[in-house]
Image (cartoon, rainbow, N blue to C red; front, side):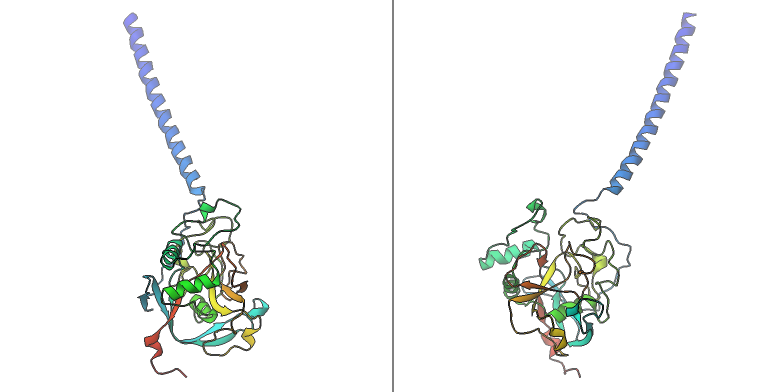
Length: 308
């Protein structure tokens, strides 16, 4: 009887251990599924949202490397539609403008690239005067450069053997020959720009590294023409300039203290992120939402016979 009791006890013990193992496996599987669901809902400050947009081929547009080692894309000669009849009063009249060919930086200047210039030119680095959060969240070498004045942006471009783009050049590079509102089309979408959509659903709460949104490139392949940082351009600001600007290669009114800023930043509204939107800012202004990119003339293309 004693041996029989031991046998029954052993069998019960084995079945008990087996049942416990099965329970543990079921629990671990459940916990793993819960963790995966949790991870999928987490929003980070430095992880871009993937886009289902088809990849585009920009190989038909010529590229070159600028004197400071940054890639530029050729914006071909020809007309495009500038301004908007559905925008703000300073965006009218919507009209056709003809530009000679030029090159534009594919990406906005980064903080590390601007720091290299500042060191070589013996200039101070931009300072952040006001920011409600931790400044280190903005000051990252790979993020877009920001908080420099118009003169400082122009000085960088001159140092690099380039210049700031004109307002017309910037708009054509962003929207192509059509009338699209944003670099990819007429709807502001997640996964295409570092813009103020809904919190940090674009993957970045503040700034992003230039070139983070492949699906948000312009018709010529330029990155971040919508969102990330707004950008200084060469022109002075005149609310009524469009009413009197020339058809070919407009360069803005004579130099004034007010300069033009283009492209909505990481905290801009849907309306202000439009490619036709114009901002006016004092030339000395520095802001955590304003950066820049450079342009240069396409000497070879513009030596060809003039267009009608």
